[in-house]
Length: 268
Image (cartoon, rainbow, N blue to C red):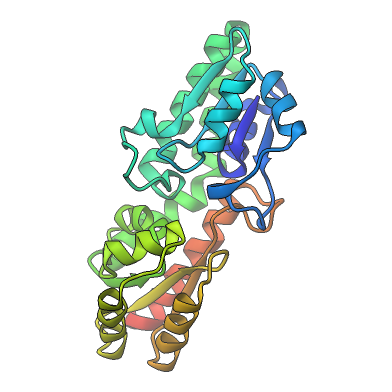
């Protein structure tokens, strides 16, 4: 099977165990999934895949083109945006939504069982082990942060943090228009920048979270302002970092960073 991005590929590989071979097209922390240019090897991987996972929601349009250009009879396609009901124009970063991650796990397992009914019990076991054991530290941290810090106001560099803030019950104060501009590579407005400067200066936000893989001059300036104001800063990345990490190792490390920043900011 083929996954457009390695965060979904990591989950699919762990759920498939030794019955499934997964190729992730975006597998390097240096590649930008927004404007990736597929290579000949990617087209071959897609053409030979019986199952394909793409994120959708305008995030990886190149993957849709790749699938359309390399049709394969009997291939199942999972578009995450369609599964979780987020339309184009909505926030595409669904792997940062804990609820959506569980919906994807459910669907992948169901699709595997349909494709290989004789292995259905094996895939059920994989899913149970993954959710109860492998994802346990991730799930535990989410509920701990939520119960301890729900409602805490935070700032962020881009919209990748918004689904996670929702999942953690944190209150995002950064204007959505600024978050979207950074994610989409457009210039934020002077008004938005002034609003954030104000939020930092007056310590309206308790922590600042930024995507270190997309650190624009505006974002770097805000990180510096936050640090100078004594506001703890935490980082996230767009794709698996380091590249060899599993989905849960990567997310758990980031959640620990956010929990430490919140503890420092609130003294709780």
